[in-house]
Length: 243
Image (cartoon, rainbow, N blue to C red; front, side, top):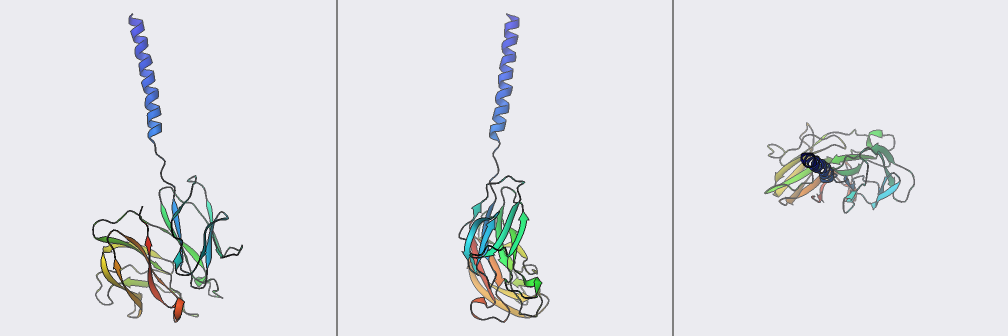
């Protein structure tokens, strides 16, 4: 009788261990796939976005974006060939290999010129912005600032500061180099932002916008120095969908 009880106890223990292993394994939830959204800030281009030769966004004009984020069903170690092409073309204007960790959100931002001539620093490029898509708390808005402003032919790229006052700003983003970005949360409500060449008193352009509570925005300085019409210097915004 004692041996039978001992045997039943061991069997019960074994079943419990196996159930525990299965339960532990079953409770591990895979992190969400990475998600990307494409934006075109290249003043002289209409673009398609490719990942490993698969079209992910098409016919995106200057100052426009894909409507939504798309997800990548990936192995975390997989490298993707991210390429930009003029719409309808089979030739890569720019291409680079990147990995995208799980549970991350990315803005793929095209900037620079397709027809840059001999000024290589102004060439079309893609910047990848890792963005926090959690909804801001209370009466705050999250703003991702991006520098896509192209100097006139013959002028070098220069850093730009975005702030709400030229002399005593209460909101100021750090100086951004061409293709650079930064993020901060601000109070919701009407705000005026001014683009200024860093370390100067000169104003490039300004805009006033009403920021809504709990929303996320991509704010960019874009256009071409001295241009008029569609490619004139401007500060503009995209709303970013929260998770």
